[in-house]
Length: 146
Image 1 (cartoon, helix red, strand yellow):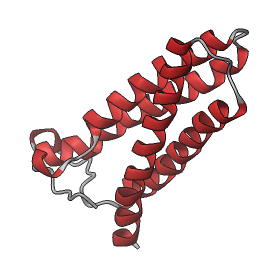
Image 2 (tube, rainbow, N blue to C red):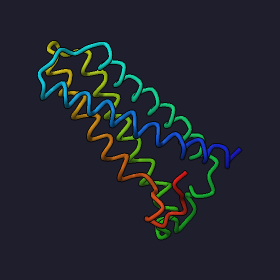
Image 3 (tube, rainbow, N blue to C red):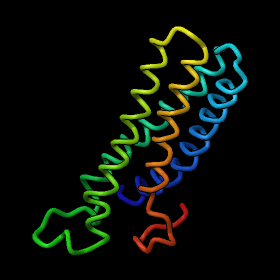
Image 4 (spheres, rainbow, N blue to C red):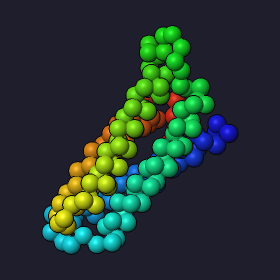
């Protein structure tokens, strides 16, 4: 079960990243191009939000069964345990909160430009936090590309 969750969580990351980039590109192009906010713009942001939340649920499942998460004495001195126990979870949760707030806030905005701006800023900051928090293979945190 653990290996299946790890592979699902790691593989879904690519879908989440693509959907976030897609939503951000649409929002920035709509913002700078001063065009009307369409249903396709809302759907791109919604799909990014949904898949980000699915990723959160998989991550929460992993958090409670992973051997890389530990609250034993001295875990803060081990960089891998500290990363997965505190850093990864905290930053990812913050990123998902920002993405959720951005989606919710855009619905209350009146003008198209304001909607695009809200999504672009909140999703952009969320994406940046996600990219920082991913255990990329070159960070030597015991994770691979998939």
